[in-house]
Image 1 (cartoon, one colour):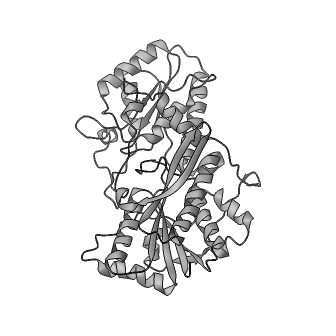
Image 2: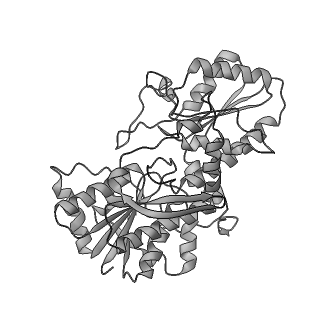
Image 3: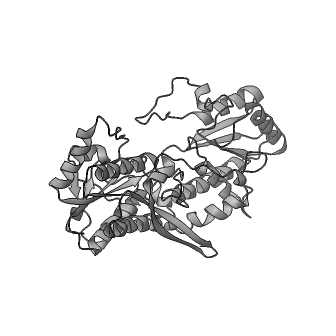
Length: 409
């Protein structure tokens, strides 16, 4: 590359997204790129010319390793939606004006569905207006719902945290051996795709019987069937732990969380901000059965836990960042890097670049064939798919008893 590059982060942070920035930086330096800029708060910040030089933070390999062990978005994230091009040309021209100001040849954007839409829009504008700059998408989302790619960086670490935490919850819930069990309902992120909640199935093993039910948004939630199952479990077990996606919904389309609060807020993309599904169900169970209940909501914990990150996930996040730069060096634009599984025994995964138009704004859900016939569990097909993604550990650098993070000045 003759010019400089810029990398940004967008959408919900993950335990692995900073590893992708590290991969972009490392590849750029291998190619001799003079300056690697970072957007401060994604494309929203870039439109205000808020950039930093990553060389100021990543001057030696130890800092790159520290970045890979830092949770959330080191550069700062955003939930800013680029408007349609027609009638908003001034905003798009502003992006190219800033790129030209800093002699930026290529823009790399790490994120999920909405972030890939930004890559699509910018690359389309460049193509339509004869702009030489290139745009590459770097996949990231704990939701694991990007199409084409086998899986998404960020998912493996979140799944590892969820499986570990639920296993610990099961241990805790089993400890009292009461005649009447405590019904523990764990709420896990996932609006329309249940990939994260599915990871609760990874708990089961020779030292753990696993969760008692898993409810995904891929299946319509039947309240009567749920209550019948809870009552049956309460009669036959001394401990009950159930995992639910925050986005489980009724046959009429209403999210379960809306039963407790009809005035659900929406974000910049029009997505409903969901919370309270477990709390609502726990209260309903308590009211109808008199049983002791407990609602646990992982919330942002599941995406911030670098202390329990999957080494496979961290390495693959670095890999896709690195591959994005190499693809841009080869002249590619308007594409996203995909992870392509080549085998499970042993697990192998490579990368390729795929047309962003087939990816942006397309949501991939958990395959029907991986959900058990009763609709509240996952079968061996999912286990074989997900198990390799949570393998390996990358431990933090501890200082004064707590993890050390790389922090933007």
